[in-house]
Image (cartoon, rainbow, N blue to C red; front, side, top):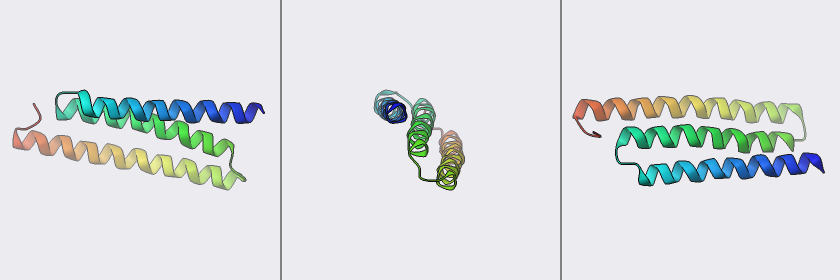
Length: 95
C-alpha cells in the first residue's frame, strides 16, 4: 500500500514538472530561456516518472535499465540543448 502511494506521488510530481516545462516552452520569450525551462523541468520530470516505474519493476535489472534510460536522456538533452543554443548564437538569433 505504501509503495503504491509513493509511486503515485512520484508519477504525479513527474507529470507536474513535464507540464511546467511545457508552460515554460510556450511562455518564455527567447530561445535560451525556453531551452533552460524544457531541459531542467523535463529531466527532473522524467527522473521522477522513471523512479515511480522502478519502484514497481519486477526485478532490479529492470530498475537498472530505467536508470540507464534516464542517464541517456540526460546526456541527449544536454547535448541537443547545447547545439541549439550555440547554433542560435552563431546566427545572431534568439536574443
